[in-house]
Every structure is written in structure tokens, then in C-alpha cells.
Length: 276
Ligand SMILES: Nc1ncnc2c1ncn2[C@@H]1O[C@H](COP(=O)(O)OP(=O)(O)OP(=O)(O)O)[C@@H](O)[C@H]1O
Ligand SMILES: [Mg+2]
Image (cartoon, rainbow, N blue to C red; front, side, top):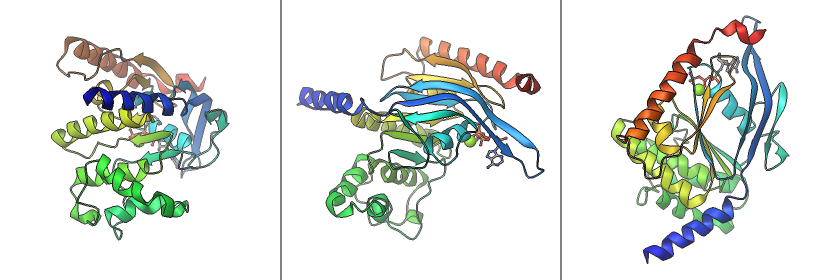
């Protein structure tokens, strides 16, 4: 029984892991501030995220992590460089690239079911995919709460509902902007395991912004440490630890102090040097 489940999961993983490659090439993004001054958020960001890879972005506050996620989402366009999903230039938002924010962004006037069904209805596929709604509510552990309204859920439950709402569209890529930041430590650790389970089951490429070094190590295949603004990737760290990972493991702790050292350095980089 257990073997059969494992085999099916592996097959699903392989099948879906062939798509969802994100190529970010020499991306630059600046904004015009309210003062009229330009501000360079990202400069020379360059990496390829493999299909099915779990990548975390970590870096100083305000360095441009959310900007990078929004570029991948297609909510922003780059000034220079290109972003591609499976070889196709990203030009606009798409259900192929699901987005989950730190605060759950559920529609307060809709039940959990209707929130999750929203994307299917907007895409005109609800009739044929109706059964998916209950399936994904179950996948995130919210069975029995389909008729609840967002205000009747705890923060963790609302975050699960947001995940289900993104996942029901079977995105190739899930973009997570500090998705667990507002949760207490206990709920957060449970949700981390939940994310890993969903990731293994779906084979979705995951790109997650987090401020929590332990969370990045616990979850990721690879951690991209970013510099202060204008942000570029300071270091790309492959996390070789076997899963499930133990936070108290000496290798885990060694990696944590290595990343904290890099962050300390990256956070102190003299900004103007990057304008030269
Ligand atoms: N729409 C915008 N207009 C003007 N400036 C912006 C805009 N969006 C972001 N910025 C600026 O770009 C920089 C990077 O912002 P971003 O939100 O990407 O940072 P972040 O790394 O996600 O920070 P945090 O860790 O605090 O969430 C900031 O200086 C911010 O003020
Ligand atoms: Mg941010």
C-alpha cells in the first residue's frame, strides 16, 4: 500500500516536473519614486530555476525580492533582460503562475469553496473541473470548512485556503511571498510540512520569499541570497540535506550560520558601488 502510493507520487512528480522552468536573464528593474527620483530595485539578476525545483529568495528588507516575484508573476515588466517560463517570454499574469501573499487575500464575501472556485470560474472551466474544488480543499487540510467565510477561519486556515485557491488552477509555478510570515511558530512549522507535502505531490516549481533562514533551509533545494538594493544574487546555495530535514542537525546549523554570515555581508554592501 505504502509502496504503491510512493510510486504514484514519484510518477506524478516526474510527469509534472518536465515543465515549470523559469529563466531569469540579466534582469534590471527600476521605479520612479514619488519624489520623481528613479530607484533601481534589481540589477543583473540572472538564474535558471529548474522544473520542480524549490527555490527560496532571502535578502535584506527592501532589496527587491517581491519585485522579482512580481516580475515572474507578470505583474511588472523588466527594464532590461528577459524572464521566461518554459522558453516563453513572461508578459502578463497567468494562471500558470500562481501567487500567494503573506496576508491571505481571500474575498471576504465568498465562502472558502467559492474563493477556491474563483479561478476556475474566471477561466470558464468550472463546469468540467467542479470536483477539483473539494479535492484541493482536502489537499490543504480544510475539509469540512468549504462553507465557511474567511472571517470564520484562523490565520493558518485562511493561508491554506489561499494556497488551495492558487493550486486549483494547477499552476506550473507557485510564487510565494512570505506566505507563512504572519503565522505563529507552531502553525508555521505545520504549514512548512504542508508545503513540502504539496510540492512533492504536485511537482510544482516553487519560488518562495522568506526572511526566515531556517525556513529557507528546511524547505528549499536552493537558496538565493540577494544583496541590498539594487539587488542581485549574491550567492546561490544548493541545500544538499536529506529530507525530512531536522532543524537541530549539525549540518543544518552549519548551513544556517553560513547563510547568516553571507546575509550580514550582503546587507552591508555599500549601495553606491553598484551604480558604478
Ligand atoms: N511600485 C513601486 N513604486 C516605487 N517603488 C517601488 C515600487 N515597488 C517597489 N518599490 C521599491 O523597490 C524596492 C524593492 O521593493 P520590494 O518590495 O521588492 O522589496 P523586498 O525585498 O520585497 O522587501 P521586504 O523584505 O521588506 O518585503 C524598495 O525600495 C521599494 O520602495
Ligand atoms: Mg517583499
